[in-house]
Image (tube, rainbow, N blue to C red; front, side):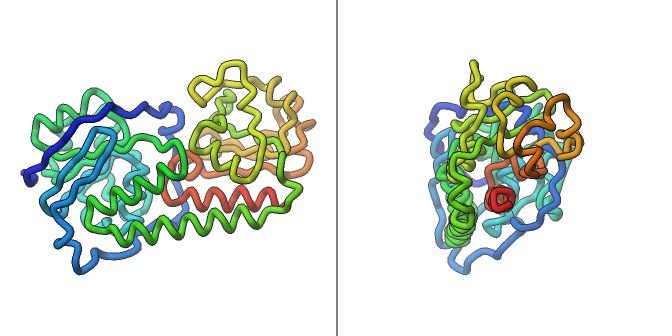
Length: 313
């Protein structure tokens, strides 16, 4: 059973729409386990970190972590805490060495999670009251909801670094991601400013506005997001229509449904009237990996670099 913990409750985080969370398999390997624990890691404890479920004090470095969040799993391995991860949920498909189980992040079961004797459980959603259920079992939990900005993502990386004894490694990961994104933005020609972008979450035209994490990436490049003009932005994830998308004449299309829904540039061009869209005519269609385009972990730098590549022509 885990070491003694203390908590001060805070309001629960808003849930990210399931259509964004239920992304398919990833194939990139840029965010693997980067380093082991620093020699002084044990001396850093006890440590207090803050999640969406309040403050959590850990008396000792956690050595039996369960991750119930695909993004948190990527972050844990990126900051060097991979060897401390005992189990991850069924959607945590990256990195390859993550110990995937049949634990469900959509219908979480406290007893099933507790069976792994975790000394820390990291979650991105408080579905089915799982935080309270784990608290009742005296299992330490850290709730880190969907990031709304890059700064939120960086803060979560640092929080996980602090909680696992890898604060220095987390700082290095954040710096690397920041540098790569800055370089990607700087690599794009000035004429890309003001280009119109359409981000597709699925073939039924769900999209993401500039108020979302992924939409914020496009803002860095100075792109105009066509989803911002939707009549109902639906919390940042509006459902557009084929007519609306074609009428907006996007210069760039990002398909974040290549794995889940077998979409690609060819399929896009075959949709009625889409052959008139500038992005299709000029070859500015990014066939993105669903996971990389939906998670707010370190591979957001990969995504920024992919966007830059399309804008460079």
